[in-house]
Image 1 (tube, one colour):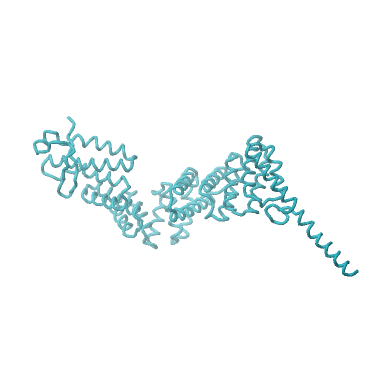
Image 2 (cartoon, one colour):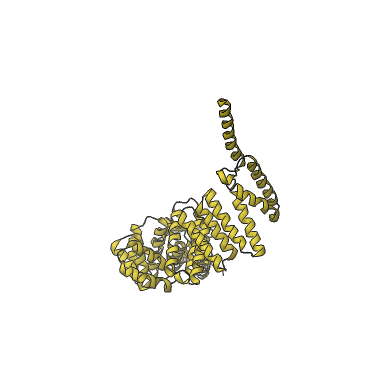
Length: 443
């Protein structure tokens, strides 16, 4: 009798355990679909909502979608992606703000069940910006989400969301919600993160474009102008004149805003060079002296920057600037040599080729007029190369080419020296030492 009683008790306990198992939903036990009949219901709702969703019949889809969302929220990330799309569409159709509250609930739930907070907050912020950036409430919500996404994991937030983050920051500054300091700090954090990604990327072009957009937004607003930056940073530099991190930041921001002639720029550059004789500090001092037309000192600092710099593109830029100074001083051979050093470090830069062309267009190194005229052939070679590499130089190079082409030797002058046809190879000697081709003056 006792054995039979124990057996009945065991069966009863087992039944109590089994019954809840068949009645549990995914949201209750953390599974993807739940168990038993609830699992079947979940799969049915997922299938039905997706069928109507694919037909763009959101009215029918939402009933089944809500059941799947409420009962098996861990079943698929697509529940959240598709749910956002439906509620965004419904809001655009009706302008009913209740749909935005549901949209936010969907994003919150996605973070709970699938993580990826940086990505999800970035998407939410971008969506809210896209839906209604002109609406103060949506704007603040967008900015808050983008800020949370960046703070959650700045390494994983999409660079396109970073652009929207800067745009919403600037808009809130315009509305006097954010201060100068907040805008500058956010801009600095975004640029720092993008610089890190660019340095480690095999395909940096999209990142460079994102940074250009962020810089353009910053420059277009009051916080990123000389009027916004100088009053904010002047007391900070005075208080921390030996902080290289601060000084570099100030110099980059001022240069970006084209505030090189501000007293703060000079002070920061001089202070940085005292404590850190780096390529960056030397370059900023060179720029400072160049703006003051102290070209001799500027050249000294550019050459110092070249010695300390490892980046070939920056070295090419510094050589180009020295070449320009030497050309302005009519030191033509030195100007040519520095421009060629720039080309050696960055063959894809058009300006050094233009400088070499301008040098050859400006000199008469031979006693004979004919020999001097042949130098113009070489000048045109370099000017053509400059505009081919950098089309933005086309107008300037064409103007010079038009002028000096009128001084080419005539056909008869060439014939007198045994040169019969155009296109024939020709070597120009002295310190020029270049190979070119014959071209006749058009008569």
